[in-house]
Each structure stands twice: as C-alpha cells, then as structure tokens.
Image 1: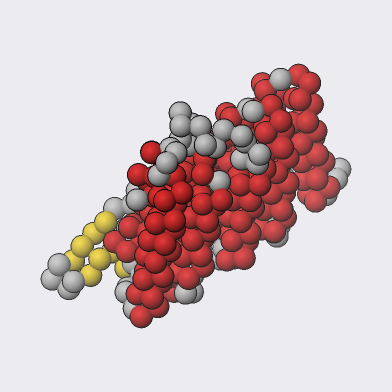
Image 2 (image 1 turned 120 degrees about the vertical axis):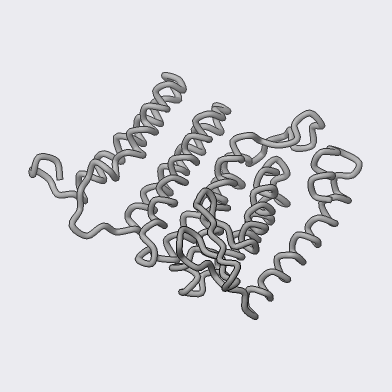
Length: 268
C-alpha cells in the first residue's frame, strides 16, 4: 500500500483511476496530458507492491487502460498515444511471460485478445480511408503486431511453454492476427508479423537470443536450452497455418486487386 495507510488493492485502484481520469482530461487539455496519464497508468503496477501478485488484476487493469486510451485516441486521431498504449501493454505481456512456466496461458491469451480487439474494434473502427490508395496501412498497428506475434512465438518455441503444449494456442493467436488483418485492411502490419513469426517458429528461433547448434548430435538450442522438437502436432499446426495463409491470401489478393496494389501484393 501507500505508506502503510491503505492496502495494495485500494492503492492500485486509486492510482489506476487517477491515470484513466488524466487520460480523459486530455480530451480538453491535449495529447501531452494524455501521455502523462498513460505513463502514470502503465507504471502503476510497479508502484504497488503485493505479497501475492495476481495476473488477472494486472491484465484486467491493462485492458481497461488500453480500451480507454483507444477510445480517446480514436476521438482525437492521436496515433502516437495509441502506439504508446499498445507498447506499454505489450511490454507488460512479455515481462509476464518471462515468468514461465509460472505464467498462466489464459491470462496471456486474454491480453492478446484484448489487444487485437482494441485495434480492430476501437482504434480502426469506422475509419473511412481504408480504401484510399495512398493509405496502405496504419502505422500504430505495427506495435501490437510485433508484441502479439512475439507472445505467439514464445508460446510455441520457449521450452517451458512448449513442454506444456502451448504451441496450439500460439497458432490460434497467429490465425487471429490474420483474421484481424482481413477484417481491418489498415492493420496490414499484423500480416507481416504473423508471417515472420510463423517462419521463426518452424526454424526454432526466439530472437534476440543466441542460437547454438550441436551438429554432431543434430540438436538445436536456444541459450543452451533445446527448442521444441517437431512432432505430429507441430506438423499439423504448420499445415493448418499454411492453409490459413494461402486461403486468406487468395481471398484478399482478389479483394484488393483493383484497389490498393500494395495490399494485394502483400497478401499474394
């Protein structure tokens, strides 16, 4: 708590309310105040110590902050603010995943789903310039694309997560990224991130770690730990993801063939 006067739960709630209220006040006072409120909201979990950290409290709080920021940024078209909110949420997600195998799969999937939902249903909602040739993609979408893709990569390749058979949920996250790109064409960076991470998964690489190969034993390792080995499940997942990319690619390439050539070429 704060100086021992109030408990950590109440302190967490009050600091979060202050951060979100500052974001709301930015509608009147400008983007600079919104940035201050967002920074305060993102560092709140660090300021409040707890003897029993609860990932659902953390990610539930981050979901509220991200959604509120998305609404405010959408109203004012504040791209930098939206990108910063996605960045903060992504950093917290990756930091939480470093606690593997203690990290909960449901919490990771929840915040990934919230991130994609805020991108598709809040930030990119009703943007009338999706078919404009000179607007091939929305640059703030790069940030959630990278972080959500890396979370899928970790679920699929990290030895601790792979041992718990998290490769399938990781593939579902990748498929969701492709679906969001189909639904919101401006989210094109998600397609590139999904494709890149799929390649990395089947190469057994977790950047930016060191890759060490033992050619005598035919083993591939990541910082001395063996990566997930190929089996029937990973083969089926790879085939399924390949079909997802091929099917979505053909459909989207035909959809954008007469419009934005960059999008059509990207899907092709």
